Amino acid sequence: MKMTREEKYRLIEQAEPGELAQLQEKIANCPWRQSYHIQPPTGLLNDPNGFSYFQGEYHLFYQWFPLGTDHGMKYWYHTKSTDLAVWEQLGIGLEPGGKYDSHGAYSGSAIEKDGKLYFIYTGNTRDEAWIRHPYQCLAYMNESGLITKMDQPVIPEVPPGYTDHFRDPKVWKKADTYYCVLGAQRVDQTGCTVLYQSKDLLNWEFKGEIVTRLPEFGYMWECPDYFELDGRGVMVFSPQGLDADGDKYNNIYQNGYVIGDPLDTGTREFAHGSFEELDRGFDFYAAQTTADPDGRRLLVAWMGLPDVEYPTDTNGWAGCLTLPRQLILKDGKLLQQPVPELAKLRKAEKRTKMSVSRGVKHLEGFDGTAYELICEVPSFDAKTFGLELRAGGEEKTILQYDAEDKKITLDRSLSGQTMGEINGQVRRCSIDADTIKFHIFMDTSSVEIFVNDGEQVFTSRIFPSPDSREIRLFSTNGTAEFQIVKWDY
Image (cartoon, rainbow, N blue to C red; front, side):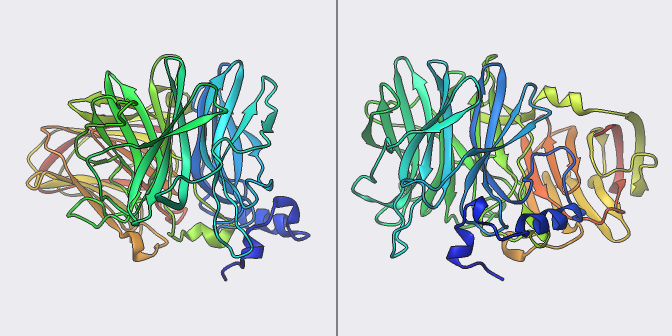
């Protein structure tokens, strides 16, 4: 049953007596709680926020509605890590409820200045007529971890020409100037990104719209993120309202990037190439990046999508974050690779080699529900080959390479508890290679697949039975040689 506005937009202290305890009991009995991914203690998790490195630690927040799985009053939930592998859960980071974030502390970003970590975020408000009024607000965290919100918004209004869909500020510094991009919707119902600049993070000047080569590309751009990598400008964003085009844009909403010459902050010109999806799976959105002290560009995304119902909804929670990924620019394209620090999570290791000819073989002794698996196929003459993951009885998640069509397919139509058809059950993308490598991170209710060292990535939620634990190898019309290494997590 859908919540009313009053039920949704409640602060956590407005929970009914016993409400949180009931949610926690439901969650404790859920068979799909993750083993090593960031997930909410209760309620809904969505966009990652404030991803940053501060005083020797990585800080990562996420949008959190603690009292259910419908979108309502959003907090920032705070996690931190010294190694990107193990995350400490710190609880509420930003709490809404003030004049300028009365209906939620929405998404935003972080930057260090003068020994403090500053957060710029969208304050969501609604008036008595339920009309949205967004404000861009500022807060800061001191050395002790205490977060203080500023009394007034730093960007108090929406510029002429744009609707109230104006949110998700991402800040960076170049030379002595701070810049900020925001996702926006023009009054003609098309999406874009706008640019602000500041000398002190407090006083922001509207510079105008970033001039892209995508003048009409969906009806809203969410979660923009601009950075430079190896001398190139990269803008990551989430356009809403794209029509499917063959194997592209099959999700209800997209998340991708464009690469070009560095953004000219004076003219706002951004000469870039085509829009490319970051992930070819089912559940990936609102990606945010940060730079670490080694100069790496790291990315985390919400492993979920707006307007999609998940089987865990009935258990009182929904959503998790992807594992951290390192971005590498190669041949004009972003590759995503799991950060090497994740090796800290590895436990028992097993290795094997196996030849499979025209059939299916159970990989004996490799069963599991939470693990890392590297499967390399150095030679093959089969038409198709691949893996059946989390298999048992009729359940299986199929990962396949078609050597004739040169396509990778991920099929979750038999992955267990089914989801709504709104986002589909099969995803494909092209890849032409003489050898195939699948680097797989399986968790209780998710799978992240890095193909050929990040040339393509598939991220998906799956909801199999706890008894579906097998890994099977298969080939059709020929033979494939598999080399397998697996670590329990």
